[in-house]
Length: 382
Image (cartoon, rainbow, N blue to C red):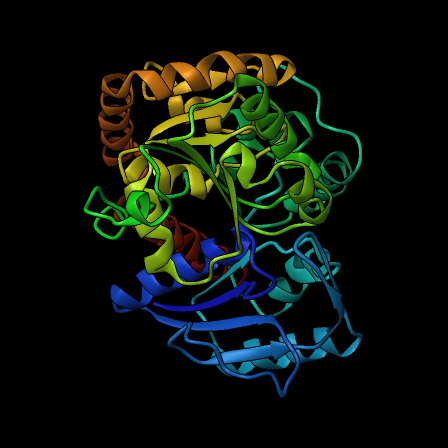
């Protein structure tokens, strides 16, 4: 099948990881993929994707949203006419181009699927004001014009349905992780950081990730010298937090790590993974940690609580996350048998529900279904 993938290569965020993993897996299954993304025409090629690329010009882009140039729409239309894909899949980048894609693809008689990533609060909670709320309110009417919309959990499906997207047009296909790559294994990371017990946070250092709650809980828990907390990632709050939570408390800031083998090595060496976010979609970092066999603690936001339910991990309440962590961190420090058991359950949960292989199979089935529906529509019009 010929697939035109509209996604993101930079700056690094969950959307980038999603596009990389899915497009590489589709290529491995023999599909022809063209990758369209916002980039400067003279930008240096990256190691992925291993397929034809199209640069869509932009004025500004960040981890949250992108502003294309006026020329971007013309480049997109010309590229789709040249590629002649069987399916167009947009991993939505929060860009004005997202709103005109249905009209473009309708004019070109191309079936169109979207993946909607925007994080949201937990079950029964209100969306945060600001970017998340605005995105859901803005996108819902337009998403109903896509042939199908992919979300990561049943909770998100219900939310989109309440906002006006037809339920039959919403498919739940959770994020998936490569369980061979992300798997338990040997690691020298504990020796490297002189740690007896290793706790890990991996993600953006941004307000929605609530990292300060973890840092304050760690400091207040007065962890033993042999316990270390690795903070992996960059973000707008890093500069203001790092000076107050440093190595004197056993906290080690590693910054953003681009090398995937190094990230796997860190996870394999870890005992506990902590994600204290106040909003999420479905965290790939959480799934990667679970797949590597770490005991996982995460807040009940987005689909993360659903991932950890029924004993696959510890689900934290966003309103009391610091107090809970202050109690739980010493517990996980002093009881390695508990982390071992939870790590085994986390790995098993990923194998049962969140493998990349199953993700791609469900995606292929959806592609076939949507392409066939489009063919039937065209035959009726003929």
